[in-house]
Image (tube, rainbow, N blue to C red; front, side, top):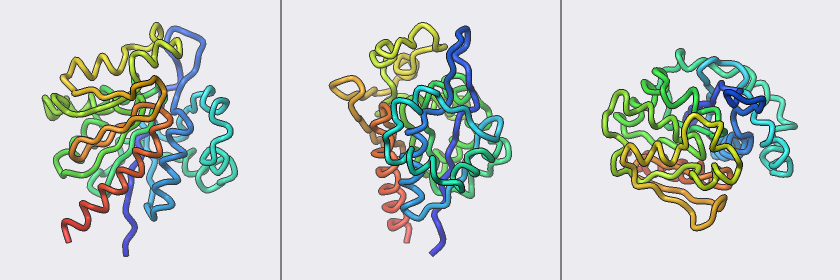
Length: 235
């Protein structure tokens, strides 16, 4: 049987603008889903606005150094080479892929929310009724869909890194906007865990979103489950 194909959309943005702090992709939000898809038999493609290696939020290499997926990635030369050789989004043909996943880190707030290629790729997934997964700040990429499908987000069950969590990590004053507030402004039915930083996954038809790093693997597993159901239903 042919491999399923998953596209990961990663950020290329490294700077917390106006500060000396760095950002990028949150490592565990990439590694946990990456290995979930790989172990489920998927062929993984990585892509970002600029291509090449995405910046990694330095805090994510400290706070998650003990995670099994991060340890596995540190020893996985093939995965590290793939990460360093990510394609540019402009070269991606979305028709090739069965599903798409967008990890977080603060970077997507800057370069995935208002990106023509992200809009083109994700709009295809919406129109083709394919499954979309995103976690933490990754749901910022969903804002780009509004460029092509106005009102896509209105009424949709969505979760993402909350305004409360943003305040608790002391990033509220340096991010371009708070993602929960931005999503609510587009009319989403926003879901969140009862406690900050606890896992939460929201499912709305073909859209699966997660609130924070602890939600990443759960989102990936739900996406894999829904892709399989979709495949069986079309046989």
